[in-house]
Image (tube, rainbow, N blue to C red; front, side):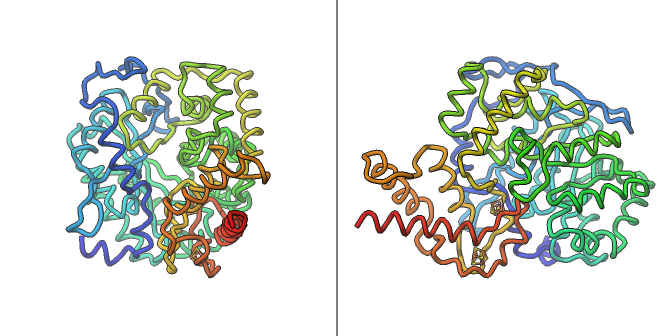
Length: 460
Ligand code: SF4
Ligand code: SF4
């Protein structure tokens, strides 16, 4: 493990998603526990044996439409170790429950959960027969592209996951940094050739890549299909990004999906909920969705949208809480595809959401740590929360304005310690290249800081 730590930079280690006190507390208070098939909660039974399956055209294997994203495993405080550790019992319980309800695809990476996800996922999966699950992991060589380091990272994944073959292996976050970075990470060092040989040898069953970036780099990497034969590609797809992905400088999801469909390459979907933003929508959007289907959860609309496309192999969800797992199981056991009319309804919903200026941060933490101590995601998420709750004061001199101003400022101090607030950003831009959502972080922080200063002036 020490060798592992040496090879993965501190920033890579901190590419955690969801390792927070809130996540830990949330799990303690979550829904029913146990792995039995009869579990239910206030929303009713969770069906078993009804999971929608999709067929991988290359292997003929059936993959569950719900895939488990292993980047948000529950954690426990471990002050003696200087932070949190993964709650392995909870992970075992979640995986057992998912397996019992038909989930057979588990997606991890050497950098998820401070570098501990693969090991934890491997421990939980090892308790199940190897032919009952598909495991996906990635070449996450973000900061050290050498062939030696990349091969070492690849080999370590087998040890951590305790497997002798990997079902789905991905080049991780292609597009981030553009074409030059892609070539340096995978082409110039010969890693693609190496991985193709590993596929021939059967140690990799399907080879693909996950994508965050521009249309140009996507086209370039996809054009390699003729020689590499990508077996699958992981893309960000949800009803907001379908036509508005380009607003975060990443290409629209309808383009990504369309290009894969043309080539009959199965799509694995990430960010169906846009990092939770499509489950924490503004109140008027909740009302709109509830009026249409009172029993359906807000999140289920997003999962139905992502799962409806026939070229989708599986839809990943990073489920920390049992109640989220159960909600998603209900949505896909079986999937009720969205109708053309519902598709239009969701596109109109996306249009309405774009009128609210939230920042497309999904709390992935890839930008952390900031060398100047700024808590980037906490600032952006506070801002988004205020937008969604209608606490973004826009017009002055009304009682609502004063209430919203107070809610914003008090909440800001509570969510982000003063020394870690936007005012301390020096604009060095070191964080920018790490953001898969292509957010101009210093510009957004500057805008928020200016906004906060204005609000403070008005309280004087
Ligand atoms: S631009 Fe600001 S937030 Fe980003 S690394 Fe520099 S100081 Fe930190
Ligand atoms: S700013 Fe970008 S990198 Fe940082 S947490 Fe948000 S989405 Fe992730």
